[in-house]
Amino acid sequence: MKKPIYFLLLFIALKASAQSETFSKRTVISGLNAAWEVVYGPNDSLWVTENKAYLISRINIANGVKTTLVDLRATDPSINFTSASGTQPQGGLMGLALHPNLYSSDPLVRAAKPWVYAVYVYLRNSCPGTNTSCVFTTKIVRFTYSGNTLSSPVIVLDNIPGSSDHNSGRLIIGPTIEPGSDAAHTQYRLYYTVGDMGAGQFLNTTRTENAQNVDVMEGKVLRINTESDGDAGLDAWVPNDNPFYTSGSVTPRDYVYSLGHRNPQGLVWGTAGGVNRLFSSEQQDRSDDEINVIVPGKNYGWDKVTGVCDGNVNGFKIGQTTSANEQAFCTVPANNYVDPIFATFTETAANMAALFAQTDNSLWPTIASSSIDFYSQTKIPGWHESILVSPLKQDGVYRLLPNSSATGVVTLPNGTDTITYFHGDGNRIRRIRIAPDGLRFYVARDAGTIMEYTYTGITLPSHFLSFDGKLISSGVAELTWEAVTDEQHDHFEVERSSDGNTFISLGKTVAAPPYKFIDASVQAGNNFYRVKQVNKDGKAIYSNEIKIVYDPAKAVVTTYPNPVPDYLDIKISAVKRTQVSITLTGIEGKVMYKKTSFFDPGTNDLKIDMQKMSSQVYILNILDNTNKEVLLTQKLLKLQ
Image 1 (cartoon, rainbow, N blue to C red):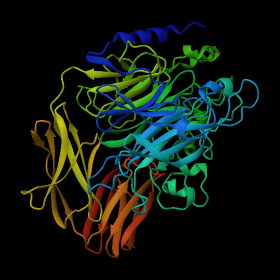
Image 2 (image 1 turned 90 degrees about the vertical axis):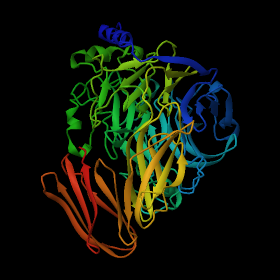
Image 3 (image 1 turned 45 degrees about the vertical axis):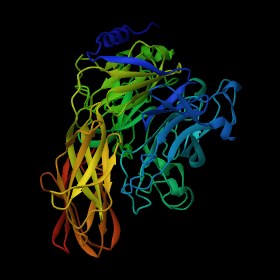
Image 4 (image 1 turned 180 degrees about the vertical axis):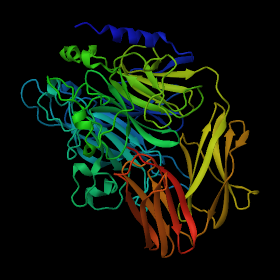
């Protein structure tokens, strides 16, 4: 079977649509042994995993000097195979994540946590039968970073299934500290993708497909603590508010955040329409590679649905010659199915039979997405809140623009599915990574090079887009802002005043977006805040001012998440016994939930079950009946 003519024409059109933006390029480093993950780190560095060599290194972007931080083959005796042994797992050393407080010395921020997280396949188990895949085991390890070494490994999660195919392996940390029942449970979380192990195809045709089995980690996105929360044993690493968490002995389902995934190698947080969302890119079979918004507890369809639930296929995969309509699965409410916001190169039902007969996967109309990143900056006109997706099949990086509600993709200027960038260097692209300045882009290729592409077009000067703040517990405020920065940007400085006239500095931050600052010493009464953006030459501009009023005698309320997929979590911090009334109403005034109760001093947690509520905007009102005060009035969006 020849390559479909439509696919050739579409690919040529994408390349010929040549972006009007201009980029210079240079090679940062070459000679790497299959670079897999690239993380932008402190001091303008790239942290890289080399999957076959099992090396974690830090690379100086300016001169390409590589410093090896750890050689896992030399330090971890549990790795029981080498690439020369003839049986190599897909990925090997895969994901890498740096704790946000890796270098922090700011006393107003939680203490420095010099931690680096890595995930790797380390154990080759049985290799059953002839021409079949071996069974592997994967683990997530936390290292302590000191000087130029990673040491003191702590196993965060072990016994993750591994395979010769579809390990996925992307590891990231959420953008904000996520609430918990107490200080130990309130922390950053790890998110990790596990593929379906290639079940049903090639050397894994006899492997069981477990993407729909919540009791097996395969085909899932997992959510894990970044540090012990004090619970006993393995439960110390399990967030107690995970959607399938059960008390008692820890089982795989306790870690599961979402299910029904095939091979999600891309995972990134991005703020679209003012809401933090978790985006993934996911390889599918034959066609319809997906871009998803990951919502806790939801099911993304594999192996019952691929791409949008349009009835074309039902778990379309090698060896499956007949299929029922996809709607038999996706229309059942109990399955909690969610469509992707976009699927690349969707095939028609009429062409499915011919596509099914084609066993050469290089001819399938899939891009084989290998990574994803989110462009939150506004340096390049029209790129703000775009998604960049790297493919394994084509020489270029795709750009997609989600709509403001992240339910679909805006039609792009060339009128086709996507726009592609960074052509001309050949070889498979393993990772796309955006620098915080919004001007530089790093592309890692399987050939062992990392390229830097720098935008050379017209940019906008530094300016603030927004600045906001709220009390998140007694005496603690979280300040967040969005800003555009140019090449002259040096740092932000957060200032506070009690009268709105005389401001004092609370500290500096050089963090990448999303920008935030924790003030753990909020004063009783009025607190005025502003943020100063300082250039390298000392010139500065200011954000707008905001006011936070803190009364130590009053309770403090925080809610999470918004939008709400299933349950709304409410945390009420009180210094004395307080009677609180909670009312949730629909946009037309219908009361959907009402509760009045006394809350004891300390932190109190409450969940509102919104699973059966329709998708719309709701109004949440929380009143302090003891002090006759409104604690919170908030709009909430309920997801489908």
